[in-house]
Picture 1 (spheres, rainbow, N blue to C red):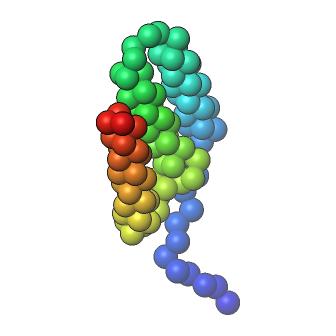
Picture 2: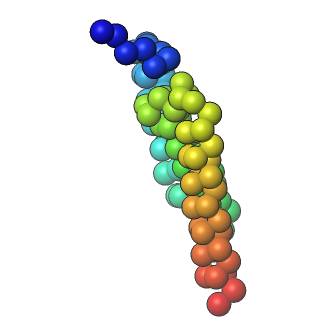
Picture 3: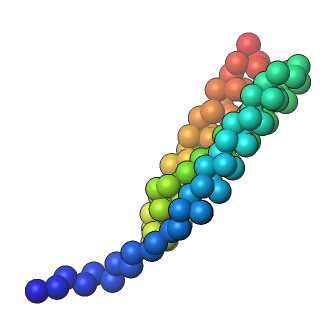
Length: 97
């Protein structure tokens, strides 16, 4: 008795995982390098931008969101958007004290 629910299993090569890992290492190095400069408030923006790129890589390749249905992608997008709104509102609160 087979249960076919339309699921496809996508095989990702080890080379892809290694390239994503190297990209994550490069982004981490970029974050550390930018933190060493005195860019004031721009350094926080750059750190958040790099963290967003790293999150995109981890979600797509290591959590296999790239191969999921659209509803899961929409739910993740909404969740991350709400988190971003809270972070922006927190920065505005701290900035205008």
